[in-house]
Length: 432
RNA sequence: UCCCCGGUAGCUCAGCUGGUAGAGCGGGUGGCUGUUAACCACUUAGUCGGCGGUUCGAGUCCGUCCCGGGGAGCCA
Image 1 (cartoon, rainbow, N blue to C red):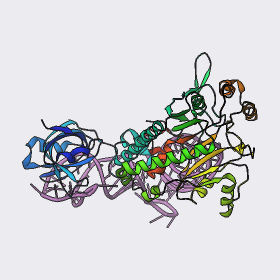
Image 2 (image 1 turned 90 degrees about the vertical axis):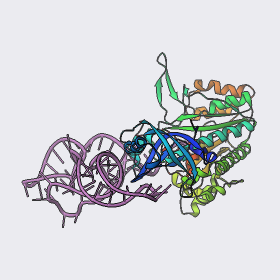
Image 3 (image 1 turned 135 degrees about the vertical axis):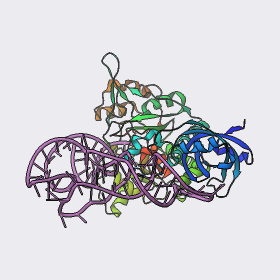
Image 4 (image 1 turned 90 degrees about the horizontal axis):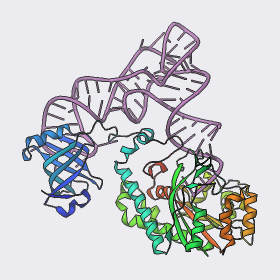
């Protein structure tokens, strides 16, 4: 019995016999020689079967193999300059596990609708592999980063009694005894309770928006990473956001360069992502827009067009601070010097990828927070627990939320967020 | 909710000013001892999204509905 291994490790077995278990990616034949492209989840390798070198039934078995049939081969690893990965397998025996039915995804072009209907199979293709490997890496690196910085992972609930921010549309579901529950749109308010308990926390989990957004930048279910830090002011989380983003980009450049190559990502665009990030205020952003001939009413939030124009002025993420308070959520603290401005930040990714981070210093004064709740017509009873955080040892604190899919889309250079999560949930689509 | 584009073979698409459907890929059969989305030959394959209308005749024109794609607003 030969050594069972995976395709990413065959380089350690040159000249030796190994067993590879996987699926047929594609095959080519030429009379008395057959080429099987086998994938096993770690990579793709070409296996060569020569008629005179294997048992007749092994050679003829290649005829019935269809795309994505599962199989096991015993083969000698050979370095070969002609092979894309540098190695090839010289097959001596093969066992067919299952002959797949006609596989719907051929190695040719397909449209997005068809691919999304077959998302469970689309995941097997190399581009999707590259994206989802980078996603896994980004999430793990972010957690490693927070752990090193002394944060604790603080899971926020997904079923919530009310809207967190009172703004966007929520998915509603029945709870017990006639009560309603809503799927969380942010773990932030709970993270604030965590920060008052542990000092530095972060949440990582899915969030839900029932808005009928139908663009490449929106999913109805997406993941957010939300650090919240006690005693931190706006400046502190600007530094934290900058450092986190640089760390993630740098780590992908270092450890996932093969995947970036598969995605044909222009890495020079990522290499320029170094600290410090440019910082501008909302008012300065208006100046940029005015120079570009865009008139924007003071007090209105920026839309997709404005975000794109502003981010195009820079080669790295830009941090926009001090938006008018009326454009932002109730919990954001007003600037003590200019009370009509919020101590907040939006981080816009370059190349038109949009807002990847939104954060702020939180209102820590009890009376002002009560006032804000009233201004936003929010039911005070639902927020009594949140007000408690200002009754019992209130301190300045700040945090932000980083959209995982938008960040990954930007790093990968992928236009549409639907490819940055295994099973995207979209306005028109909840299958598979 | 609004605006734009689309729906023809399993997939990707072509089909002009109306005359009852084509290609490539995939599937099938055969050929080829170094193929790289292999190639060559033959072959298979359709309620032209649904309904209604105009017309001698509709994939094509009109109306309407359904589905999908892109965008706006909203947001990460």
